[in-house]
Structure formats: C-alpha cells, structure tokens
Image 1 (cartoon, rainbow, N blue to C red):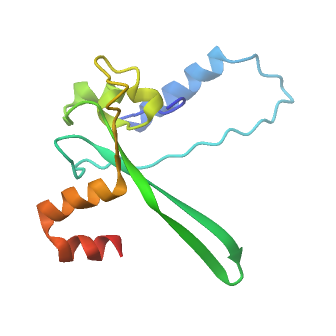
Image 2 (image 1 turned 90 degrees about the vertical axis):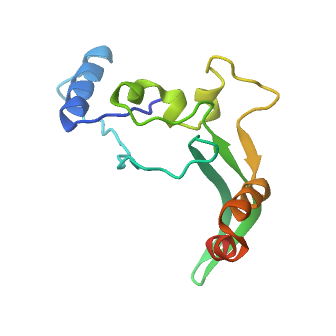
Length: 142
C-alpha cells in the first residue's frame, strides 16, 4: 500500500512529482537517479462482490522460458476492500474504498482482524457460480 496514489488529472501527477522532489534529499547536479513508476488506468465500473471492490491473488511459478513452462497454484485468494464502493469524486481520496491491500485495509475504522478481508478462491468461485451459473464461471476460470 505504500506509494500508491490515485489521481484524476495528469496535472495532479506533475504537482505530486514536484512536491515529492521538494520533500526528498537535495539533488546534486550529478544525481542521475532514475525513478520507476507504474501507471494504470482506473476501472470506472468495476465488478463488485457485495458492493465491494476486490482483486484476486493467484500465484504462478515459471520454471522455463524455452519452452515456456508455467505452474499455476490453484488455491489463491480474493482480497476485498472493507467498505462499499462509490465512484463519487470526493471518495477517490479514501483508499479504503479503492485499494484491497491488507496494509491499507487494516488501518480502516472498524477493521476486524479475525474476519479480515479475504476469501479463498474457491469461495469466490462458489459465489460467482451462484450469481452467473456454472458454465459461465467454468469458462472464466479455465
């Protein structure tokens, strides 16, 4: 969850970058450090479970690239936000609605450490089958 930011306008990214440079160590003229960023488009109409955003954590092991050999660990899990999703602009700053990272969720007011915000992938699949039917979900998880 550290270092994750949500912006609505490219100008905000430029302002954030300039402010972060002022907060950091003084730059030497010879300082050629390269900073890496991941930028992705926000899904404006996400699929929700119980009104909450989620992501799936699925693990793979690549043992060879030539030929490509990938092993899939089928017992992944889904991580959920602690609160119901809303797409209002004012809610964009509330990371508890938008990000499913445990590091973010555990700081949410009312977070239940015992219940957590996770389902096993099998539990998510059962829920999806109840909502959309066995054939559709089998195609999705194939």
